[in-house]
Image 1 (tube, rainbow, N blue to C red):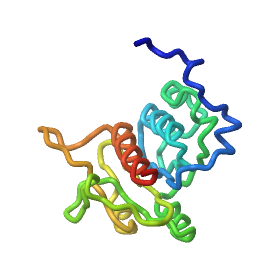
Image 2: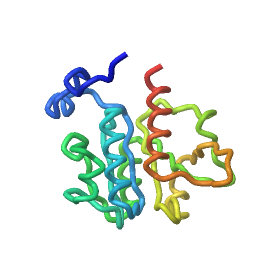
Image 3: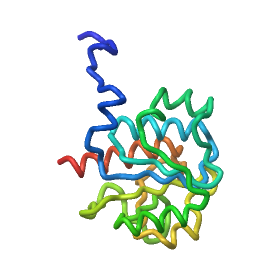
Image 4: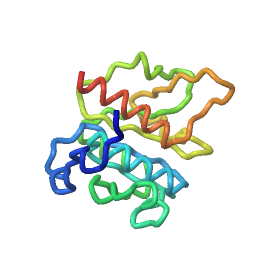
Length: 175
């Protein structure tokens, strides 16, 4: 066994990435305060060919030193846009027939491992590190999913959450 070098990985170029068919998922960051978390979400979006990221409210946008540190160039490959208001972003996605799914702990959430994806483009809403997805945003989502957790803590870092949810959705879309 030997560790692979970057040249062995045969990664596609940014130009090819831009032309490649994308996974029909948009990630919406609802007032995410950490630029490092934003950068990590960009890297996850690049890894799974996510079509778009929408940065809302206080969420930091590129160019930003902290985003760049975590994204490692993914801000150059992944399409992104800024929308001041998360509700406005969701309204625009709904007009494009997106199914809006928040990731949050609520009384009627579906567990990620038991969740069936709809046959339409998906928008995943991820919330603030302290307050989560706001109540007014939850009220305009089609549904809410939750990552099952079994320890003493009842939350995950947003970048970890994004990675778990995107991976699970990607597996379901590509099986």
